[in-house]
Amino acid sequence: MAQHLAFHMHQQGADQGREIEEPALRAILRGEAEFLPRIDDLLRQAQQRGSVLEERDGAYRFLHLALQEFLVGRYLSEVTGRESRERMLEVLAGRLADPWWREPILLLGGYQATHAARSARELLRALADAAGDADARFAAAELAATAATAALEWRESGEPLRADCARRIVTLLDDADALAGARAVLRARAGDRLAQLGDPRFDPQRFFLPADDTLGFVRIAADPDFVIGTRSADRERVARIGGYAVYDHEIDELPTPTREFRIAHYPVTVAQFRAFVAATGLAIGDADALADPDSRPVRRVSWHEALAWCDWLNEMLLRSPALAGSRVAALVRHGWRVALPSELEWEKAARGGLRGAVFPWGDDADEGDGRRANHAGSRIGDTSVVGCFAANGHGLHDMAGNVWEWTGSLWGTDFGKPDFAYPYQVDDPRREDLRAGDEVLRVVRGGSWRFRRDDARCGIRFRYPPDVRSDYVGFRVVLRSSPVLPL
Image 1 (tube, rainbow, N blue to C red):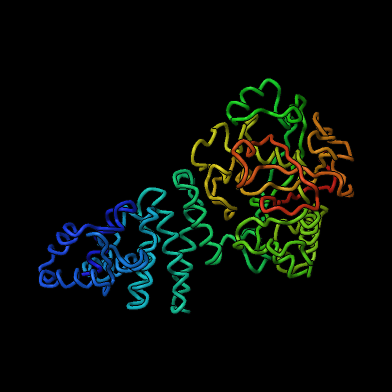
Image 2 (spheres, rainbow, N blue to C red):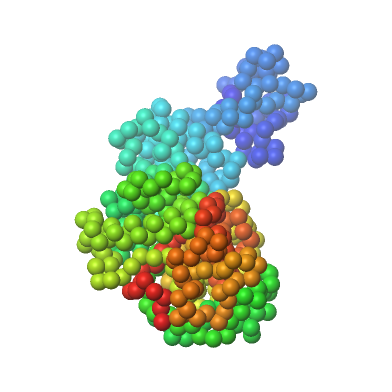
């Protein structure tokens, strides 16, 4: 009777599903003939505080919402599931992305895992592959992954299921339509579950670098006509779309040609940085840099620590047998170097081949829900696993939002006005002087989860001292044919 009542109450939604008046309660229970002789006893026990229900002023509620949620999950298994697994999924179909139904669905998986592990695994596989709109598909995949991760008692028998759940999330992250259609918070939640399951996009045998022959480096072709920054003729348009004024130090009119280089598909992740710390024994300045899920971008690392990671990866590409057969290792053996990108390289990559684009995806302002990038408007409220937002035209993820990214370029000593302004002089050795003191600010690019949408623009320039460690600053790297800037 309790689980029957819980299920029917829960269907009323978060606003009305926590409490029920006595006439409505009786009407629900009268729907089952076997309950008729026992309704008065149930209500009497509730009034005497001797039941899973409690009564106050003629209204009834469960002693705790968690108890109601458990009974809903039990009802789905014992009553709805008696018909078929398909019937359970049909009942859940319109509720997968509803936070009110999250705990009952997880408890359903846990209840089945306790009573019928095989049925539970089949249910979670079917849930992971559930159809529906983009929100429903991401929510279903995340729920299945969460339940599969929690079912530790399955031990070895649960590993294939967890691998299936991980592959399903990766498939969704590779689907541009799904990324565009799903709420950012659902994608971020699924991304965290993916990191917990073991993210197959990255190879643990190769320092958790991307699992492809390029180690995640994307070729950016030379561009003799590229212009860094914002032209004065575009200033009003960019400000209107971006939602904020364009800074004077962003204005530029002259071409700044770029040579070919390669840039990382994603920012450097926690797992990649942890591999570096484990290999070198480096005493990093903030232990929380390694606290996030493995596939989120590393943060709370200084500019110097980011540079040290570049030096370590160069060494590994030259000497590690695990990387020896990759194309990138071959380039390093021929004089290419892993480095922090210059401002010029970063912006060339960020624009994704779209000349004058306001954002890496184009001129769409990403209004309202932040589906394009993890900025303050996405409502995630933290970093997100890399690749939870669609790539730009070069196939690069998270060039906007998530974390500001260190560059090798200098800003100057004045927070308000850069010493190194535009036009961008590519042959000025001072601009990329890696030996500059800590009193000289370094340029960061790309915006972050904590900053507004305008700071995710391609042309935005920001700055921090090189020894700062912030929860919204990370880095990605480039591979170039010379340690000096393109000429």
